[in-house]
Every structure is written in structure tokens, then in C-alpha cells.
Image 1 (cartoon, helix red, strand yellow):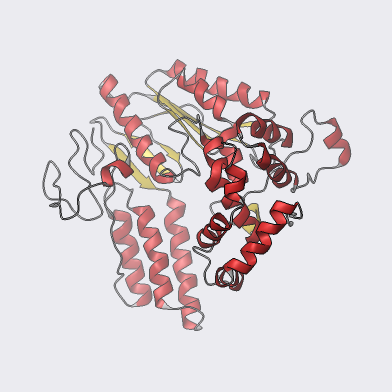
Image 2 (tube, helix red, strand yellow):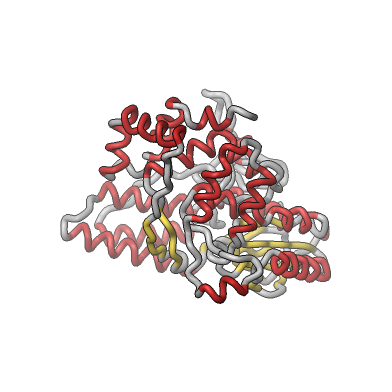
Length: 408
């Protein structure tokens, strides 16, 4: 435990951080310059860190437009490398230790894939327990979660969880680097002091994931069908009173920490369906779980393809980049029940670009942990589902009582 800082500031870990941080941005000059001159730039960064000369540079504020407009702070590449080194050598493990299994944002092996599968599983479990789709649910959110996070709460979280105190000055600098833009008199009157963390930093993302962990543990004592994705709480249960109690618990525990709760859907019936993570979920009378894309997703994808077509006509992009973009949409759409959305977009793509789309379909596992089910010996024969051969991109291995149609 005591040598985490020395490991993170070693040349081996810094060069590893440079390799990992350049993934996905190799087309930019800055990351490639760092990668080409990894030793010289890494040595300079190591000397600055170990001698106390390292100072965090102010990040660049950028606008995010999808799914809604938000402001993010993009850190400099050298700061991203050091944050990655800290996360690889203790900070990630310290901040994620003790989190609930259904806290699914910004963690290894989880993400939106895990959240969607867990939502389907919870709906199936409720149907098995009750024999009907007459369940209830609530969906809570935090109003401006990142901008309203108190700095004092993050500092207290770090001192509770971080095992190597050598990391604390660097973590405090990251948190305090984003200054509260409210008037000074309002900040002075706020019992929590300065607020706001930057969306876009790896350290800040982990802080936000771990900060509300006590609420997740409290919800598990109320209903086992509860999960959280960053600041989105979802509680499903067969009993109406249980969901009402869970919603009240979320509200007062958020208020206790200086946050404001937002009721995104009210108290809803599982038979009517609900939206979560830009997907629509509905439990039918027969126990089938229907999953659909949000209607805005298809509209935004058509607009994006039209924009790509205009860039292609002006010679500012290539068909290869457009195919990669479309592959990303297919990866998201594969979670929907059936192929209606994919076939509709394939038709639109063909009419727009005068070619049939080419993409790879991925086998989706809608039950349990996908990483565990992936592990299979090489050369093993293709597994079959209970009602026929596996279809690429639609069904996974045969799981008793569960197939690609989301039936319990």
C-alpha cells in the first residue's frame, strides 16, 4: 500500500500512461508527439512530479451537445497521463472499493452495457416473483450533479478512501482547479462552500461515482432491484409503497449532502414502460422485456449521416470514416428487441450513400455478466440457443429461461 505513489511516478508507469492516453486520439499532433518522444517527455514529467514542480494546467472548456447540452473541461495531455498513472496504481481501486455491483458508471467491465443488462434482469426477476407485470418503479436524477458537487465533500471522500497520502495533494489540486463561478456573497452564504467539478477528467468521474455510494447501500435495504448510473437512480419493485419509500430516501439523502433531487418520471407502472439511459423498457403480460431505442436517437443519427454526406461531397471526409461511425450506431442499436431500427437505418444509409452498409454484429448477452460468459475455449463449436441456431448479433449462448428475445 505504501509504494503506490512511487510506482505511479516511475518511468515504466508514465510510459504506460502515455500509450493508454493516446488511444482514440492518435490523429492529433499533441498525443503523437508525446508518444514518439515518450522517454524525454515522460522523464520531464517524472522530474516535475517527484521534485514538487508539477502544477496542474487549467483545462479547456468545451461544449457537449448530445444527449443534452453540457459544459466539460478537457485536461491537457500531460495531466491526463499523470491522472491515468495514479488511477492505475491505487486511486481507482481505492475509490471503487466497496461500491455496489449495480453502480455501473465509469468502471472496468461495466458501463451502459452492464446497466441495460441489469435492467432487463431486474424486470425478469420481478415477473418470476409475482407472475405478472404489475410492478412499479421510480427514476430520480440529481440537478446539475457535477456543477453542484461541494469541494469539501470530495476532499472528505479522498481522506476516507485513499490509502497512500502522497496522492492527496494532487487530488486536491484537481478538485480545486475548477473555481466556483457564483458571486462571492452566494458562496460565503453556502454552508458547503465552493462547488463544481469538471466533467471530462478521469479522477473527477471516479469521485462522482463514489460520492453517492452510501445512498446505493441504503437503497439495497429497501429494494434489491435498484441501480445507479452516475447520478441516475432507478428503483423497480413489485410493491408500490416500496418505490415510494425509496424515492423519499433518495430525496432526503441527496438533500443531506447538498444536492437537489429531480423526479424524471414520477411513479410509473412497469406495464406502461419507462426510459432509462436513452432506452425504452417495457414488461409485457407474458414476461417478455421489450427494449427500444429512444425516438430521438434515430432522428439524431439520420441528421448525423446527412451531415457526413455533406462533408463527403466537399471532400472533407471519407467513406471509411463514415462506415466506422455507422458501426458505432449499430453497436448501440443491437440492444433493441428485434432488428426493426437497424433495418430502417440500413435502408436510409443505402439511399443516402448509394451503397449497402457493411458492419459487424456482436453477440449480446442479456443476462448475467457478459465478461464471464465471453470466456470460451478457442475452436469451441458455436453454441445454440434453446429454439434454434445462434444468429450473429442477436442471441448469445443458451441460458435456461433467457434468450435474445428477453423472455424470462
